[in-house]
Length: 237
Ligand code: DC
Image (cartoon, rainbow, N blue to C red; front, side):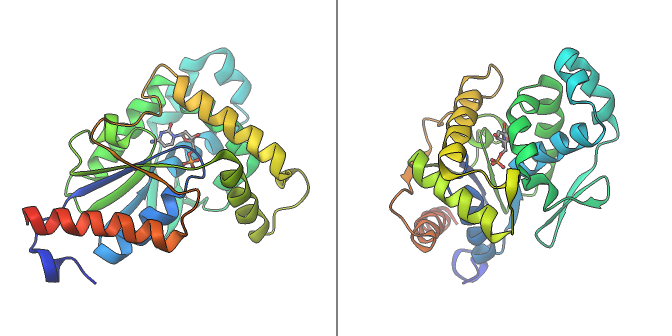
């Protein structure tokens, strides 16, 4: 069902935040498809910067001299097309999901110049509205005026099981496919780092609607968020 048939032409911003593997991206992508909106995965943007640092062999340098990342941000291009992510024109959709990227992304995303650069890119991507954007700070920092703010949470063990299934389905093996216990520890550690960092930490906006997805199917999550969006659009459209 396309929203323009039922709710006039008003378009909104839907911000979906929450910890790692809480179902944000699958939910956001499907809701965007149902509403005819654009889906923007901001985690993929932080992962792309991390991949760039790793591929340039600069991770140790950035760790010792965080400001050295600024040079690399100057000619950064991240675009989305047909559900694929392009970094400086290269398709990095699979590479950014590798565990070596997951292990470093919290560090890279804690750096001020990275957050500032990506925030401006994200605000530009959403300036015409009609977007569903997922991340950690979309409702709090990037679009604090987003009409609909959702905060998804789920039990850490359940999230690790989901991440394992996702990696296995992609054919990961060896060091790229840790066991579920290890994935759970990595997820808990990443949540801690994302929630405790000084800049734009993972936090629920007071207006955000919290949904615990531990016991929900993807279809149930999607329906809940879509119905909230449609109710809002009908009320205010
Ligand atoms: O959603 P994800 O797991 O792909 O995100 C990867 C990392 O990027 C996550 O650990 C924290 C960071 N991130 C962020 O700091 N701010 C966002 N808006 C999105 C992601």
